[in-house]
Image 1 (cartoon, rainbow, N blue to C red):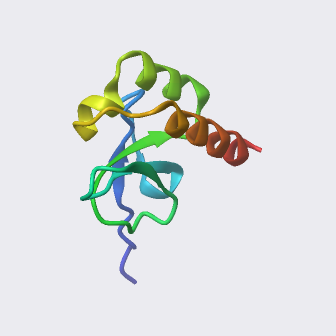
Image 2 (cartoon, rainbow, N blue to C red):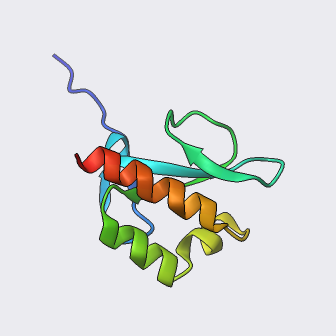
Length: 90
């Protein structure tokens, strides 16, 4: 029987490689809006972040989301991320 392929992605906060399903995707849509992509299928440039508070703080301090998405990220995106990460950790 063939082994199933598990897609791996790198967290922008801690730079660890993890399975795609364990990470949250933040996407910059073609029109420039930034938001969360919980399905992983929205079009646009995406970056991934772990479901840990430490990774979110590292990404915020180092401005990794802004650098990777090549656009400024508003506080509302960080608030949404914090809420989703908190829900996933429960």
